[in-house]
Length: 76
Image (cartoon, rainbow, N blue to C red):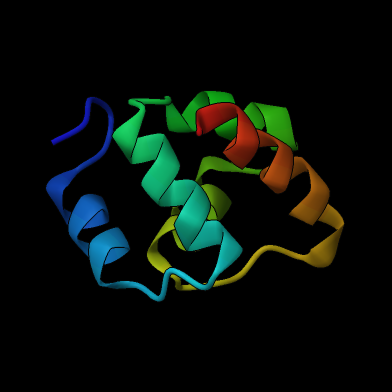
C-alpha cells in the first residue's frame, strides 16, 4: 500500500472505472506515492474532492482536465 492512502481509498480506486480522469489520476498518485495534499494544492481543490475523484464518487469538472492531464504526463 502507498504512503498516505488508506487501504479503503486504494481498494475503491482499483475497483473504479479507469476511463474516469479522476480515477486515472488516483491510480497514478497512489502508484507514485504522491501526497493527496500536494495534488489538491496544485489543482486548487480540497482533499475531499481529490478523494472523490480517486474513488469515482465524482468526476473532475472539465476546467481541471488540462491540469490533470499535465499531472498524468508527469507521473508516466
